[in-house]
Amino acid sequence: MKILMFGWEYPPHISGGLATACHGLVEALTKDGHRITFVMPKAQEEQNTDNFHLISASNIILPPFPNTPTFSLVNEVIPFVDQGRFERVSDGKYNFSGAYGPNLMEEVYWLSIVASKLAIELDFDVVHAHDWLTYLAGMVAKEISGKPLVVHMHATEFDRSAIINKQVYEIERQGMLAADKVIAVSNLTRNVVIDKYHIDPKKVVTTYNGVLQEKKLEVYEPMKLKEKIVTFLGRITYQKGPEYFIEAAEKVLTKNNNVRFVMAGSGDLMNKMVQLVASKRLSSKFNFTGFLTGSQVEHMFVQSDVFVMSSVSEPFGIVPLEAIRANVPVVISKQSGVAEVLPHALKVDYWDTDNLAEAIQGLLNHKTLAKHNRERNETTLKELTWDNAAQKVTDTYASVAQ
Image 1 (cartoon, rainbow, N blue to C red):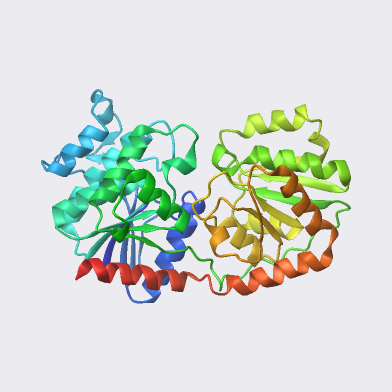
Image 2: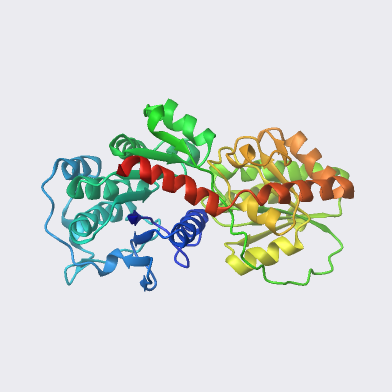
């Protein structure tokens, strides 16, 4: 099939969890013979192979504003405030940043304008939109082309913050209402979609993410460290539960001072977490690395003795899979989608820092437990492939394209 796919991230531009998921799925789908046109706000460079075309929306000359019911809805969800929306239009094109900055809603709006043009010019069978940022673009493309829409829910607004952004929630809800099928990355997410957004359960399907099995890890020589290393890797935001990681670290250090904790990543709670560590007088036992690139992540895993995911709400969670692939034992939050597919991982409630500390201590102190954790998880990992995910997505395409 020919798929018009919209996404906000794709490697190497913003290589976060969404980029990893989009890349893994696209690689598997194209290997199966699907032809993917992937549209993102700003790509470092466009790509064009037999089965894959990466388009930067920044390079598309803008069409006239479409006069359709869906675009009227776009204007309701993201209303015009002033003529400032045109300040970044030059030579008939909108200069997307592709980032998550102050102009985010403006860029979401203009991507839907670009989608209206591509929906006319391109030949495709299905529209596939990843996450809320591209749902409006997907809706516009569906209405203009008459082709079915599949939206992919990688995370809901309920996963991102304790305070719900009503505008984002409404975009998510309208996108799922307009979609012919909704793909949720876990049963946890599927239940949120049904219960909190009131979407018909019959059109919501669960497709788990995978991990790149064939990717060769760089060979790094572990540094000879006296201390054991316990790693948190992810955005330092409310959703990821960084404060629970710090609280558990404090409890571990009261019993075992031969441990160093590493918080790798960046986010809006970064400064607050640095201050929290300082207030607990743990600074000598903590490292904050900032954002890590792919090779830096691999190097971090080589040094790690335990990986911890303490998320308050995690729709899926690819990072634990990457840790397992690097042969690192893991402790994960029960409040995560990935907990559904890792039956042998140590799982704790994110708020239970006593249990989390005990799990970390167990993996650090008992080699047999750590070995069992690694081996059982590695066996499970072999079944979590992007090829399997692509097959389920292909079945979803077939169900709407009939």
